[in-house]
Image (cartoon, rainbow, N blue to C red):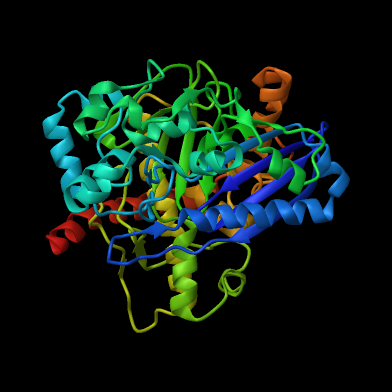
Length: 485
C-alpha cells in the first residue's frame, strides 16, 4: 500500500493506493487562505498540518487494515510558498503563497543585482516565486529575516513534521529561483542575491528517492506495522504529471484548477524567460518540463459564482452541452495578476462588451472563454520556445465540465482527453513517487496513463470564431495596462 498526500491551496487531499494502483480510500480536508492586504495571499502552515492529520485519520478510519500496510508515502504540494523557520524549527510568520503579488519591486531589484538570474534559473523573477518573497521579508520584516534559519516550501514543511527531515526535491526547488535546474543543485549566487546561503536550504533529492521515514508516533497513530519511507515527492504540477504518466518528452496536459497550467515534458532544460514560460526540473531524474501558467483558472468561475449568487454547477448547467458561438462579451481573467506571457502582478480582470441585453449566461460563457484565451496565450508562448503540443490530457476540478473542455479544445485547436481520474492526479502522482522510493521501480514501469473517458476534438467552426475573438482579447491587454498605469 502507498499513500499520496497533496497539500493544495484550497484543500489537503489524501489517497491510499494498492499495488494494482486502485484507490482504496481517499479523504479531503478544506483549507482557507488569508488576504490581509490587496495583493497579499497567506496561509498558516499549522493548518496544513491539522488537515493532513485529519485526512489521514479519515483514510485510516475507512480502511484501517490497508492503512496499516502502507510502505511508502509521497508528498505533493502547492509551489513557491515561503515557510520561514527559526533555529528551533518554529514558524516565524504565515506562509506567503504562490499567488501573492507583493514582491514586484523586489523582482526588478533581483534581476538588476544579479544579471545572470535568467540564464542560470531559466526563468524571469516573478512575485509568485520564493526568492522575491524573501527579498520582501528582508526589507519589510528585517527582524523576522534575521531569525530565519531555514526556508521550506509547503510540502517540505509537512515532510519536516512527518519525518523530522528538512528535504526538498528538484521540481519544487526549481520554482524558488534558487535552483540551477540544468545542474539540479542550489545556486550559491542565487541565494546570495537574497542574503541567504546553502545553510538556509534543505538538502535536495530526486522526487522518487527516499527522503526519510515517518515518525514512530505517527506510524503508531495510523496503525502502520512499520514506519513507511517518505519520498522526495513533487510540486503539484510535476506530481500531476507523474499521476498522468506524463514522464516522456512530448507528453502534455492542461490543469484546470485554482490556477491553470499548460505542461509539456522535455528531454532537456529549455527555458524561454522572455515569454514568462516556466522551465523547471521534473520530479524524476534527467527529465525537465516547460509550463505556461495562469494565476486564475477555475477560481475565476468560483469568483463569478459568488458574484452571481449561484452555485457553479447551476451556472454551467444553464449553458447547455456546447456553445453555438463565442460570447459577445470578453473576459480577461487576471484576478490575481498574470504570469505567462505577461509576468504582471498588477494586472486585473475585465469584462468588455457589456450591453443591455447581456445576461448571466452570456457572462458565465465569457468567463470560461477568457480562461481559455489565457491558455491560448500559454500555448503560443510554448510554441515560441520550440515546444509543439499536438494533444493534451485535462485534469483539475474544471475538467468535470464537458462544456468547458469543448470550449478549450476549440480555442486551443487541440484534441483534449478527459480522464477517469482527472482530479486525483497530484495525490496519485505522490503515491507513485512513494512507491518508487520503496521498490526502486522505474518511472516507465509505474507511471502509466489513466483511462481516458473521451477525446474532445476541436470544432472547426468554433475554432475559427475563437481565433478572431482571441485576437480581440489580446488587443484588450494594452488598454488594460494603460488604464492601470
